[in-house]
Length: 241
Image 1 (cartoon, rainbow, N blue to C red):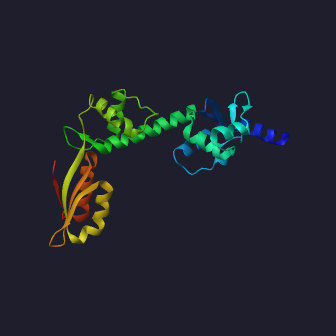
Image 2: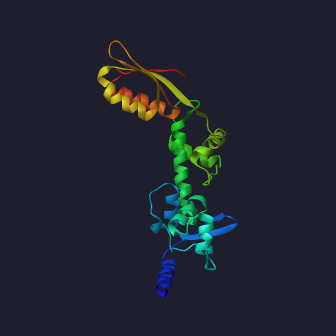
Image 3: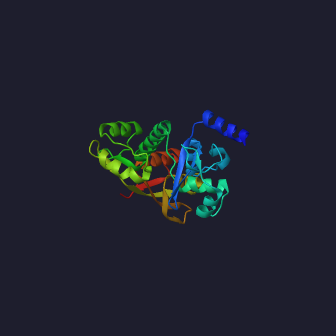
């Protein structure tokens, strides 16, 4: 027992940890976890509980070292198995972020949003894509605050609305009709699937492939350029809106 306590103490002093908390059945349940691995686990990465937790104890108050009894765990969780209880706490509870994590997540989310806007939008005046660098500068000019507690999808429209106050920006979906000669079909089809959604397809009598494609506005010009380069202009493209 003394050896176990000594190893647990060594873990606490040698590794950074946060307290994951779950309130259930009128009580509080806490475990000590590695902040980076716990966050990755909550995002769906396959990490074992053994590699996430610092010590195999469920506390009622981790700071005071007060632990829950096996009977309490059985009553609230239906099991006293530590790994099963820890999984529930990690999935349903709250895992605080360290300052370092907040900074990294904010930057990662910021880059994701910049790339999304560059793909989803075009310059409303020139009809050309908006380069990521211009989006980045516009975010600064509009003093946009990115919320790390919301996904990029959840806040992208609010951000685009704010950017419209400082740059001419248009969000939407482009629809283009494409005629692909038989010789290019095998190479072109996966490209079309990559860029957007094929709404209609059919084969012509001459073996040509006809498609109606919907894709983000910001990718329209890039796709047209790629098709022209691949076929030396033999692939026909018509803008529908």
